[in-house]
Length: 332
Image 1 (cartoon, rainbow, N blue to C red):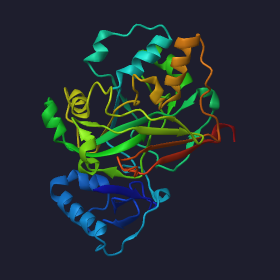
Image 2 (cartoon, rainbow, N blue to C red):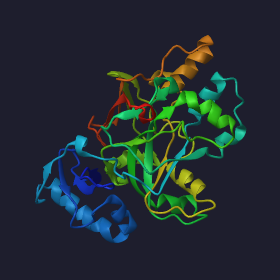
Image 3 (cartoon, helix red, strand yellow):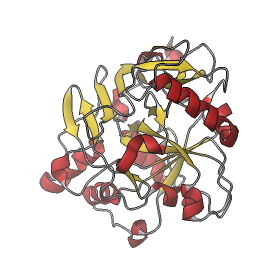
């Protein structure tokens, strides 16, 4: 099943079912008004959504219409929680090596995770607004899950049972603001602006055999200004799977339905697979040459993030965005 949230002038949008081929949709207003509504009562509402999905894909749904990703908000336009892991430890190792920082052994068995802003997610075709290029604008292509209720201290197996949906992510970062923030010892804040998500969220069964061991075993494609710069396999080199990330988050607290947990930047040890964030490309340049030559994003740059199935068909649709300058209202 594929779910989208349509722009309707409200903060939380209108829930819709989308066909497997991403061509048709039907609003689910008779079942649940929003995705959060569905997640809050998933055991009851899921069966009704599944039936509507079957009807849509069989051509039986009333009020079916063409699906347009430009009409979409993020599947969850705002969420109770956004926690982003860093399960591709190769990415962490490269970035630390580039600045001659030691790689703690604990990173291989204790997940890194930060809590980002979840009150203002961005739709898949909405612009990435930023006040200054000098902040070092970067894209980060990831996979994320949306959970049901996960109790404090839940096991990895219990966490796995609460994975409701999966999405693609562009976890935008402002790289030049990060060092000073991390030096304070309290983590990311201003350096992590609003995060973008794919047009649809999908249930794990939509992935077929690509969903294995709590990982998505398919290439994640990042296309920067029309050039494919990376297609690493999201299933390879993922040290911590999604159930492990969820259990880590739930160690000391309850994780409520509608929480979003990210994988971190998808990265492979095989550098020939390319990169899904500019910081990793720059890290490789620093390691090889002692200096980075690839610039960060400029106003007018575009980024497309997408994952295709084994038949070359898009699973989530594409995150397809442009970086634009937002006027500084302080000086208007």
